[in-house]
Image (tube, rainbow, N blue to C red; front, top):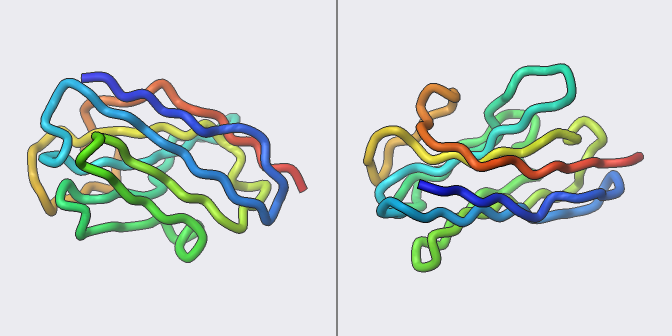
Length: 126
């Protein structure tokens, strides 16, 4: 299984950016996909998850109303649309795919995920 994240960069506070993660090597629609992030000197934290069937989503409180996770099962890709960015969103963002096959189950901790992308860095300046 390979996950390739892209879309990071530098943004101004209040701006927008979209991250993408392309998956290969397993039936994409069978597994929840999530985004985590790790700020410098901090642990890797959950950001958002979307179920395999795309009808269940869950967000970390700090990004609710600003970030939107979506997936396109036809092209095996998950996206994270990030609006109204804040300096505290600065981090390396990782996509991940779940351990277990389920169309509606989602997990909000790292131990629920088996495969991880290489990370894409976001810097938000004020």
